[in-house]
Each structure stands twice: as structure tokens, then as C-alpha cells.
Length: 327
Length: 306
Image (cartoon, rainbow over all chains, first blue to last red; front, side, top):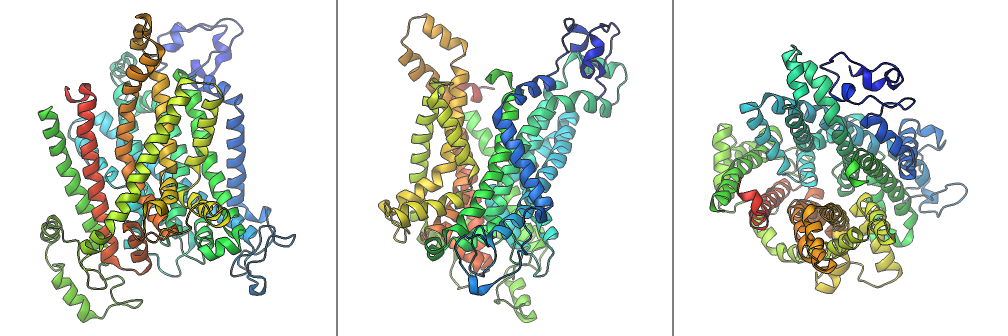
């Protein structure tokens, strides 16, 4: 960001900027902060609001915890998730296996820890894809207008016309993973499918915020002073739309994790021997097993739900902090 | 109004063409339509050649697509694995799924709207916090977890409801309908609460109060009506989520509906059934949304006059 007067709040206490800075936005010249008080941008205001919310810290801690689990499962367990002891199948939780053992005699705790990786990777990759692709399309169609806008909006409508889960089933069913596909490749495929179905929502958001920002005087001024479109996009349009895009993406991340698990649960997402919460829950959810070994179902379910909850809660907190109307 | 309806209908055409083309191209041109036709092994070349000729796959893509659309308009969704027409398979099962879906819709609108109104009126009080927190949990817990846990707790442990719903009677479908409605119920409650508390701050509410209208009338008539409009749009979009949820719910509770048929077809690698069912569901989804859009024009005159 080039918006230096807003970022370095300490300097503005002594020197009120008098030069007209076309890229600094009107706020920097209009609001000279009172002595001793930092200039507050929307960002720092939101951060101040966030800091005092326990929900924010709980969700952030949960996310850090699950991301750590996904990155370094060895930190949480030294048991091999692929080691099966059939003679101990469906053993109840004990000091030896904290969450019990499943039908194959696998350690449910170890598999629950290792299952985090697939879910979180799918969530993050799908979100990144929608974020990058959706933003680019949204900015181009909002900024370019004309036929580019019409065409990309119509294409977006087509993808929005397919419900996420149904589209996921259709596309992943049509391109089934080969038997010996590495986990990363299957994860990327699922993330790609979810991203393909999800990008129009981000594109719409981006497009509408471009249309909102474009007619403003400071954008016209920047353009009159010869700022290139890429500079206008970087210093005016992106900062203005980033907040809502980040909120929606965080909430979507939770939703993508949930959809991936649902696909695996239905038997089309990840396939064993891959370890994932969806597969674990699917294996545990036949009626006989629910009765005989409910811990097989409950522990992975709890982890999955907590992850989704953490992301949705974070998105909710950030939205409340960024939207002063709701306070 | 007439102009608005015609415009919506015209806007629908490219979407339907695009969606069907996307499905067709990915399944028949990019994917392998003979997938699973011959069980776990690859199909013999003679079979593939005959299949390609029967399904016009040797013609140019655009001709293939037009022939496919012609069949689709006549209700032909293809012939599955067992030699049955997919449309017949769906026709035999749709009453159960429709019953489940309508029960879920009723549950989510009635409970969702009431909870949202209660929370919106008593903002910041206990009931508001209760609704916000509990809906957050409902949204976060994936439907198959809610379904399995409900089956375990209310079906197996407590014995309040039947564990499975194989006949699909009203009583058997109560628990599955609640499970199916759970996430949407939470969304509706949150949407209703947000709309209501925003509208309660609007100028017309202040005017109504200043005129001396009772609180009951300002909230019950003026604010409530305006706040319901976005909820109705949401219900249109939600039909898509309900369809996805029905696959999971029907699998868990072993309900013999379209969702369970789709689930079993996936397991059996019955491609024609999977693709046909999903195409049918997506088309229904598009039409329901068109209807909701048109209804929206009636409810909110501002929409249709621009």
C-alpha cells in the first residue's frame, strides 16, 4: 500500500499533511488526528475491536492448533496411523489408544490427528483458488465493463447455477482418481473442483466493490494525474474490497472443508488408504458400528466440526469488526 | 411486471444452455461415458464402438449436444446399468424425497423465522445470544455428523424416533427432516435476525412509532414484512443445499428416495444414473430459483420497476 499517512500514525501527530496526495485518499488530508492519539484507519479500528473479543481469540487459537496438526502431525502423536492391530479391533478408548480403535484395529486418535491434513489442505487450496481467480475476473469485469463484463457475469451465473455438492459429485465422479494417486494430487483435484464451482461468488463481490469505488473523486483524480489502471487497482480498489472478500473467503474455507468431508463420506472424495475425517466418519457410521463403537464416529466428528466452527467463527468476528453498522 | 417476468425468463435461457452444456461436455467429451459400464474392468473395444455410435459420440460436439438436449427436453435422462430408464427410476422415488424436502422446508422456515424474530427483537439479551451461538454451532457441524449423532442419540440410545426410515412415512421422516433442515434453519434464523435489527433502525419504523402505532403493529406488520423478503430469496438458493443434504440424510436413514438412489449409483459406478439424476436436480434447482425470482418481483415492487 502506498497510503503512508494512514499507516504511520505517529508522524501525523506533529505534521499535518498539506500536500495533495492523489493516491492517499481524501481521509489523510481531512482528518488531522488530535494530539497524542494515533490516526485510526478502518484496519486498526477493526483490530482494536477484534482484540477485545474472546470469540476471536478462541477461533484463532483453534485454527493455529489445527494448522499445526495438519503440518506436523508427529508433534501430537507418535503412533503410526497405518499400523493396524486386528486383534484389538473396536477396542474402547484406553490409555493405550486414547480414542479407541476402529474396525481394522487402527488407532482412532492417530488417524484423527493425521486426518487434519487432507481437510485443511482442501480448504486452503480451494479458498486460494477462488480468491485469486475470482478476484482477477471480478476486477477485470468491473474495471473493463462492456462486453467483457457481460460475458464473465453470464459465465459466472452458469457456475452459480450448479449447487456445490451436486457439482462436486458430478465432476469428481466423472474424473475418478486412479488407484495409486498420491494424496496431494487428489487433494488438489478436489480443491480445483470446489474452486471452479465457487469462484463466481468472489468475482461478484469484487466486481461490485470495483463499481462502487470507481466513480469516486479520488479515483478520478488519480486517473487525471496519470495513474495506470494497475496502480489504481492496487492502491484504491483492492484496499476497499479486501475486507469483504476476506470475510467471505474465511467463511467459505469452513464450508469447503465441510463439503470435502461430505464427498469423502459419500465415497467419492478421497479414497482409502488416504486418511481423512470424512472417510473415518463414513466408515464409522453404519448402524451396527454406531451402536457398538460410537467413539469411532464421535472423535473425528468433533475435530471436523471444531475446524469448520473455527473458520466460520473467525469470519463472523472479522465481519462484525469491519461492519460498524452492526455494533 | 410482465416485462420483468419476460426478462427473467430470457435471462434463464443462457444459464440453462450453459449448465447443460457444461455437464454434457465434461461427462461425454472430457470424461469417459463408458466408465463403469462393464464392471470393474475396462470395456472391450467392440462395446465402446457400439456405445459411441448409439450415443452419437462420433458426431461433432455441437451436434451431440443438440441431440442430447432434444432427448433431455423429452424427459430422456438415459438408460442405466440395469437397462432401466433413469427418469423412471427417479419417478418411482420422487414422492418420498419431495415429502422429506417439504417437511424440512416447513421446519426450517417456521423455526428459523421464529428464532430470528425473537433474537432480533430482543437484541443483546439472553435469547439473542442463545440463538446466535446455537446457530453458529448448527452451521459448523456437517450434516452427516448431525445425522449420525441424531441417529445414535435419539434413535439408538433414547429410542424416541425410528432409527431408519425405510418406508418413508410421516412419522419415520420427522427426525431425518429435522437433520436435513438443521443448517438451513440456522442460516434463516441469522438472516432474519440481521434483517430485522437493521430494519428496526429504519426511518419508517421511527415514523410509525411517532405516529403512535403500537410496538406490536410496527414490528409485526411493517418491519416483519420487509425483513422477510431476503429470507424468501435465501430459501430459493437453499433448495440446492437441501438437495445435497438429502443425499446424505437419505443415506444415513436409509430412505428410499432420489438421494439414496444417487448414493447407491455412485457406489455401483452407475454413470448414467449419477449424471442423469444430477442433471435433473440441477434443472429443478434452476426452475425453483426462477420461480422465487418472479415471486420476489411481486413481493418487492422496487425490483421489477427498474
